[in-house]
Image (tube, rainbow, N blue to C red; front, side, top):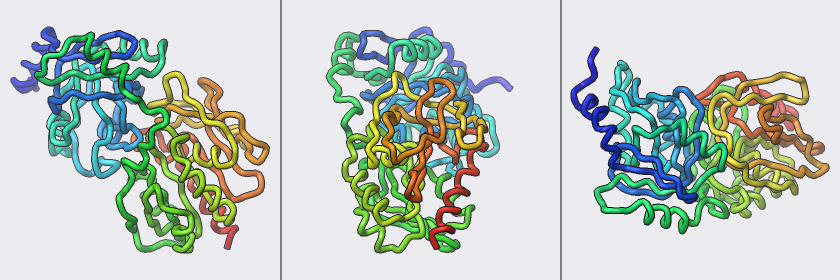
Length: 374
């Protein structure tokens, strides 16, 4: 079927390339504006997933970032409410090679309409292969995305990118967290309280499927308030930006460890558990973003292909923590467990969405910890 006229016109307009992404190191990538026509600042990262763009858009862990999709074409299956992983779009912008019209019975709107409705800018027609290689070789970059009609030179955009505070030292978890506690479901053998640092809905679905009654609380909820709910276990969710900027969360984790409540963390929650126990957490050169990261389980020797989305990694683990998983691409820490207390965490996303489902079995050890604590 031929593409609609408006999309053929878009593709023809690629040569005009009236928008651009300016990196703080002075490099500029030109393209065509789509989505909301408003400029934005953000941190440019690349995601190596071949599909799942709507789940990526609605992952709160991308708050403050421009997501560069390495797959050459997006938009083919449109967008719909069922595939959303949170209550909104938290990323700062989307960078792609080509946008296609939707052809899918589940689609309720196009990718461009979806971005525009949520006020998020995008740019297409970019040489995303060259951009990805640049970010890989030179590291994650602060950037300015120019898609509006405002006259703006590339030099001024680069200056604005350099002046932006970036994500280091910034508490983005409090920005994306739910404003008030809520119940996800009302039945289950175990009551699990989930700290929402940027939680994805599929985490909550996986916990419910494992037989848990789930209550979600905001990121800044004190441990005393959580303990008053008499949970069988506490889950530390994923989330955006710098875990070192969340001292209140580290304090809550230490209080929960002292109470010997079974704990499981993923992504940001994993980093917070490590920091609370005395580990160090530093920035990776270009992060891990995508659905194809190999991780080795040091406890049983198995290897899983995992979904990941993080810019920081734990290092210098204290004696109280055991390294349980490592990344086979760069050797970074992917999992830990406490040697004396009922707590463990993984850096990757066992709930996926998008991504492979190989690691979803990791919710079972959490249930086993809660069974042992009874």
